[in-house]
Image (cartoon, rainbow, N blue to C red; front, top):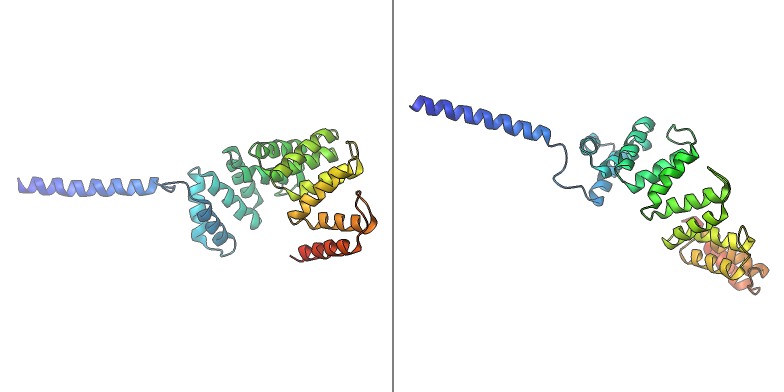
Length: 245
């Protein structure tokens, strides 16, 4: 009887050890999705610290399907020149719904980066996917593509619409471009009040080129503004300080 109990005890111990090992091997993902802070820490360690452990963790989580880890792993490979792996993980993350990965693919196809050939239709597809989540940089890119006729005929109505969306989401660059469009009457009736308003809003958000535009307007009496050398000098000086940063 004692021998049978001993054999059962050894069997239970062995079976539990095998089960624990199987569970440990199968559990490749965190118990919860990693936070943005945790991912940024891993990204920094992987890219700047060259710590193999950080890369191993990202790869494990990425293979387990965590889209944030997939995107950060793609950032790592892009920074280290492994373009094929970068495109693979950006694509995985983008298809899983990661907005930043969609933006990265849009840029890569538009600019011919990461070893990809320029493909404006693919760029537009990924930018639109990112813009559907309110991504200002994607909206800005779509506005500029429509303005420049990239991936289709020039469409100023679409350009203004996309740029206004980007501006509504805080893009100072989109505000600056809207100022230029209304100042020049580019596909819209010229409207100096609108132009000045957009330049001012962009300048308030730290856009040095908008500050320069306003400074020159005060210097020359453009945009319906009075000549004001003092105001012009202040704006141009502030623009220079912004550029230094």
